[in-house]
Image (tube, rainbow, N blue to C red):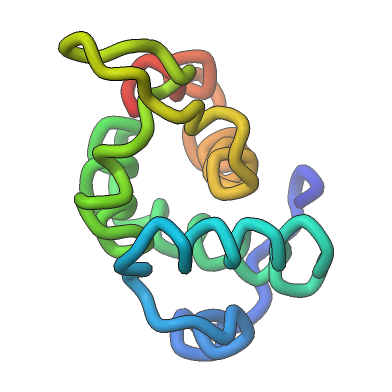
Length: 124
């Protein structure tokens, strides 16, 4: 998403373009969706636009993350990841910052709260 570019479509239209029910409920479904985002630029753009539209409802990065992420992926999936794949409570986690979802979130946050984008990894 380029600076100054506005989201194209309504939330409903953008969700339809993603061709998956949100929130995503299982890790295998999430990993499949991630692969689709890597190979389908239209889906990736739709996700970026959707996340930006959702971010517009909030004034800070903390609310953007904590209110929006559960609408995209269920807690069960979130629990498999940490911001950078570090151990949490002795359990090895997957690296959320390596996902396309993170990349799209980062692009939306950069447009909506540019001063806070550096905080994104620590807030997830």
